[in-house]
Length: 309
Image (tube, rainbow, N blue to C red):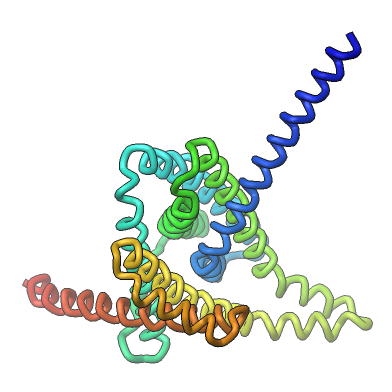
């Protein structure tokens, strides 16, 4: 009886170790996928606050919560099943789809950069929001969730590409961890950023030693949002270029990627090596994004006279 019990305990311990190892693998793979998707994550965090600008402060957190719920639905109910189906039935399509997403990121980032520099005209939102406060709020939430769907698709595609050889359940677990983790991080950070100026006002109004901190927080937040936007734009360009580099290597054009890796090793690796790779990826992202931007602008000019008639 004692021997049987010890054997059972050994089996339980072995299963527990296996489960712990699997959990460690999921966490490690999810962290790796999240790191690779960092550029899209930063851009997601930079884009979302604009959807609560101009609305009543009391509605900011409820709106962010509703957008976060929409993001969960995008990732877990739409994109996760689609990604698993793609991996199971058309794995050959993952790389070209990922490269198409990388090209889109490079285009979006390059277009934003050119607009910020005044080299091309700024393009406003696709739809004008009108109506009462409730209608405006609902329209902004819908816009934010649609934008999130595009960014989330890229995040999930990058996550899937980090575990191409893993089994179905490992892929599902990694995508689930990435979807939940990134959504919590992004919208948690957005909530903190959006309410930071309110916290600053409260500290300033309270007076005492914390008052200067509150005033500094209020004055700093516009610069923080601007810096976040700049970093998000740069991240889109270098991440998009990096995806294109890796995709080209997968199709036998590994020279540019190997060249960057060689330069990164030449400077000693580490942070300097990462900067070299990011800069090289950014150059490719700018070139690819510039070409697409020129094509899009040319197409719009050609369509202009036709639409006028």
